[in-house]
Image 1 (cartoon, rainbow, N blue to C red):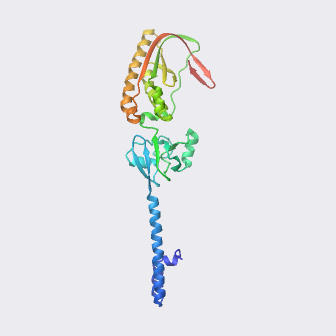
Image 2: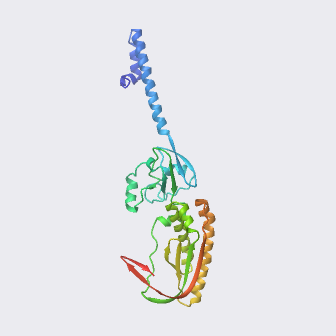
Length: 295
């Protein structure tokens, strides 16, 4: 009866109360009218409360942010002042806003069409979501931004330059540089798998500039180690000097990363050792499948 359109129209109420002569009946209809209006008011109030109901999103190492059902994770983080990257403007085209979900993945909306399309291209694991397309609907969530600053973008977006061509079986005099992360077992045991690998990627990516800036080439990375070679055409002395310059530059890079990145974001100071050797080696490319590997 309370759903009757007749009872919700103001003119109908006036006609009803003015044209019923029986006072008892008139009073009854008045009571029904106010009962229906009260129920309607309560229903609308509950709907508004549910729409405004907030959950909490913890950005590890940054902020705990309140978020409503109508906001995306990206909207909420930006509103809280978190420098959340979104190169494409939050349109699911760049993936720079992606987050690693640590807890509460069941409280997130499933991937929509835009996120699914990008996921099919980039093959995200289930616990990596696009912040610009994801809403929190069922409870609190704990996550980490994958791209912390501008220097991280190249680690996850775009492709590296191609390798230079090397002759097979060529004998050369080269300087060899090896870097080893100290106390690596502690780092692996103290951080989630993603964080541990991210620390290594961040570190080695920074070292790449120092090595290549001195005409060196990273040959291999093995867990906690990095192996690079330096080959000038004119004399072994220049090769050795280039390797030493790169080593000093790498130690400077490590100090800067510790102060500006690893300690603030991961509460971890990374230390390492560097060795340099010069001698005669055989170098070239070894093809495995469709790829060439320098050895």
